[in-house]
Image 1 (tube, rainbow, N blue to C red):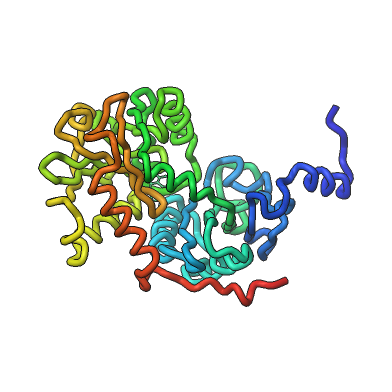
Image 2: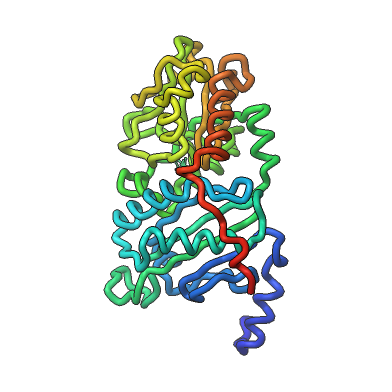
Amino acid sequence: MARLLSSQACHEALTQSSPPQGEFLLSFYSSVLNGITTDPVYMTLPIDDHMVHRGHAVFDTCNLIEGKVYGLSFHLDRFLRSARDARIPHFASKDELANIILHTVAATNRRSGVGIRYWMSAGRGDFSIHTSNLKHSNFYVACHVVNESLRERSAEVGVSEVIVRHIPLKSRELATLKSNNYLINALTAMAAKDLGGTLGIQLDPAGNLAECSIGSVSIVTASGVLKTPKLDLILRGTTLLRAHALFLSKEATTTLPITDFVFCDITPAEALSDQVVEMIEFGGAHVTPIVQLDGKKIGTGQPGPVFKAFHTLLKKDMLNAVEFLDNVPYASSKL
Ligand SMILES: Cc1ncc(COP(=O)(O)O)c(C=O)c1O
């Protein structure tokens, strides 16, 4: 039977059911708490937040590498565009949000192996579909442990992928902004696993390749052209756009074994043809080689030279591109 609990009993139950401190959840900022905690017991959301009961929130990420945060500025630009499109008025400026994120990272006291995610919700109020009774938007940041060896293993051996044909792509309104409404993406990833794939690649309404459940997808042809779907119906992947910028930069022209990088339609038949020598997924500042599609070997069935070149270039970018790196205020983050 469901018992009526005292505040003390609630606290004890939450303490018992939370993961141990530092095991997975490392630090959390919440505008509801108006501060940062490292205690997983308090890393919770109010049930009356529009993010919880209407999926009315947007989110984004960035990376921690050797004690610096990479990509915060361009991720926050997309985050604020998503918030605008989701009609969530934000209470803080881009700089203030960046500052909160950097202090939440500092509270982990770690220099690598940390995932950084943040959300802006329409806010708390009643359970109405309308937002007129919501008090103000809320901002949450969560830093957590990431298993970097899993990612390295995928880069070494590649992954198998499948086209998930039976789950329709989200509408343009939902797919082009990064809302926390990822049910379709989660179903795509689950279907991909069922079919022997990894993340799953979706098709657009015209039947062309669209995107992976949490990444951008591309093919490389035998003539050295990297092709990737146009971005009008899908998320503008920051990793893909950074790779494109690197392709256009002078430094990369000598190290990248491609002649062109184009945004165009790609049919499943083309992706599955012998003209395709490599397939690459871009996401979260990383690249992953896709070595098998729908059971067919891509190229040699091994991570190829274009993947390897982007892997090296993006790693270098994360370490050296000072315009995309922010210092973490570790010293200021003590209780
Ligand atoms: C649906 C979708 N497409 C593409 C991407 C790649 O975006 P990014 O390179 O900015 O991580 C993601 C990443 O979260 C995603 O969820």
